[in-house]
Length: 526
Image 1 (cartoon, rainbow, N blue to C red):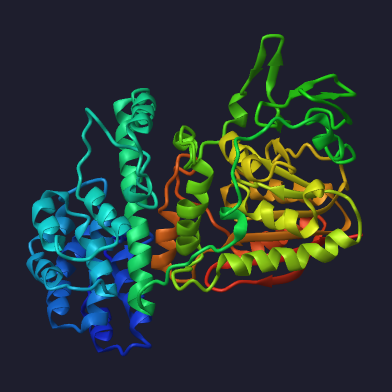
Image 2: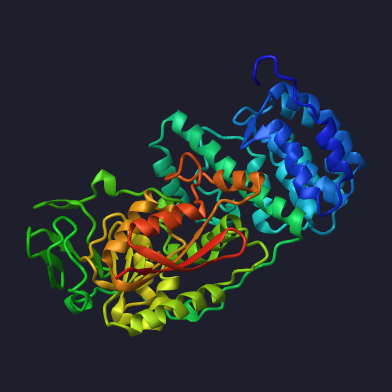
């Protein structure tokens, strides 16, 4: 707080909030929270502590909708003290937990208020017995219950359970072999790294619970989204070795990462016609065109090519691709796109990609790149639209590409970085970059590479996410902390994306998206 500044007081904002009707509730909630809190930090800890008794009294007298917002507000104030547990604000809130616990005990159906109370009460591991008892008969979904249980759990330094918190521990129902895999990499961490990872996992878990609660209090209970695309009913076989013809049909596009010379394709890989670098094709039929250190002894990853992500510790899972598409990806769309109402379904995404790529592919027979293809769910749509023999699926994650190859054996799969595409200038008719830009270390560089590789008139279809207008929801978006994002998740402002596209020689043909989705179709200028 600035010297000689007046302490923040809840009197005016709290009165306005208590008197607000349903239309003004969200605005007055943000004004109330903003009196004491800004983007995860307390403006003045002493003032926030002093405000707690008034917020607790207001909760007792409030209606259901107001109560939901107040529970979230209290959770935000407590969370702002983290990683300290039992700080002054948390202590003040803890002294008034009984009405919250009584409210939960009477719950026979999960409501937005239930979710708001789950978010708040998951911040009190020292009250785990009372909180768990209160929720024992509440019919929570398994993901919500495991988020609650994990929030109420303290770190066990002798056997820490790390990396399996998002979107919920339930979504990581691992076997003993996979648990042993976790223990192996956890043993390589220092005590400080273990604690930091645990705290990051906890913040991520709270961010999911908070985002769900905030959206629900404002809009009603979330709607499940089911993916009915035939991709999931297609037979999945172990990835087979690809022959040289799989890649040779793309010889006009694929090139050496180091010098951009043409490649000569062989069954075991490809060799650069310029610098003679050899790029191996693995047993799963994946051509490795990433920039790697190469020697007579074989291939080893260079440090700059190692991209940590939420899946880095899940590589041992034999079904990692399906796990990503069925559990992790939908959760990400709900949170980052505010898609709790299912406004965007997989069928809508499918139609968007197909409708925009079909005319682009008809103009030329040049290849189409599915950039950051992942497990291949949207590569399926691209291949179905333009023909599998025209598609190059590119990703940096071997496990995901192996899953993709198991369902799409006729698609050429390439391991490479989006920031350094092994693709010749002006050689692609289209690029699809779907739900991936926000995961790239340098989004502007990725778009520049797309612009370089597209032919004049070529099309880019892009889906990513923008920051929410609501400051509290924006905080929950940013608080998803993964190994590659220790500072929290980074999304975009739409004008940033437009500027990067323009710099890459791409003009926006269409921009849309409900919630915080960003759908863009752009064309390479002639």
